[in-house]
Image (cartoon, rainbow, N blue to C red; front, side, top):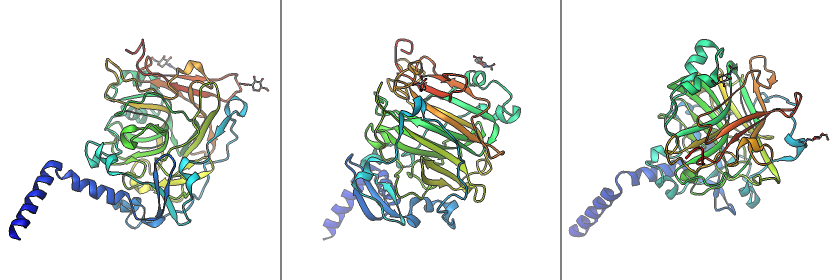
Length: 413
Ligand SMILES: *[C@@H]1O[C@H](CO)[C@@H](O)[C@H](O)[C@H]1NC(C)=O
Ligand SMILES: *[C@@H]1O[C@H](CO)[C@@H](O)[C@H](O)[C@H]1NC(C)=O
């Protein structure tokens, strides 16, 4: 009996040796992320969606949200904007996700994409799962000093760029922003390498170069986190330049989900096809002045919010907004360059139907009016790999911001 116990103890020891503490860490992470489901929906794309009691979602495990009173709906709307659909209304809005064909979540629950052990094991450690690597946004310091009265494009070209990211973006800076919106053209960028990601998104930023806060939303292809190359709805937040806080979707506590119709990290379809049907999602993020929560909406659907007390700077307003794309890869600014594409994978000069775009770009400032930003700048970290083109067909037409590109090519070897 004693011998049997000893053998067992030694085997356990060996097991822990081989898999380290991480096996226990993974179990704990899985338990924290996959809350008990009141109903489970198996999506045709392989995702499992758990309908979780809205009061028991992972958000409320956050220390800052211990006594948080959930806000069920925004006390204000982003605003009524008269917007035009590009190309005379031929782009169609996406109004649901693939999983919702297989069922609906009951009232009082929120749909949450279930995380598998394999998902977490792909990360370098459970605490890095679903998290970006740290970076700086040097322009934020000067933006504060000069109140936006400087050439942001020149500034960003001059400043050091992160080793593992490439952005092609439109930037609004120099005001206090209480909200931002755009229609984001939805694609499935080809050739996204397994350890890379490619996103099309909106960022709201506040704070300092090495201590900034963001809230972000849009679509992403991220095989490392999701295990496949589907185009998925995503959010992100951090309050310390991606160093130790925040994550994508609900993979850490913080974001409070209120919708029963959309699951963060679940696939969206249909995606656009070249010279054929175009699809978009309308993404808005805006501050609720009565609660200081930042709401996220997708078309007519309110998705949920980032509670104001997750943040310091963003509690009041954002100081910069970016629209565009980001490629993450350890092979940017390097030869050979990553083959991960951005947007549709095609150059902005190909315009509507070929290149990916943001349009109906809007901000909300202290005037509480919804506006096309009065000052906008275009910027790309690597113009030969991913580029930008803010296009206006006529003086009165709605501007369309095209961005993206193939990554590795003859000019970006
Ligand atoms: C949109 O419609 C107007 C009027 O019908 C037409 O002149 C214009 O060429 C169209 N634009 C595009 C991009 O199809
Ligand atoms: C800002 O700087 C960029 C890069 O040097 C330049 O191409 C652009 O014309 C400048 N814009 C303004 C408004 O000065």
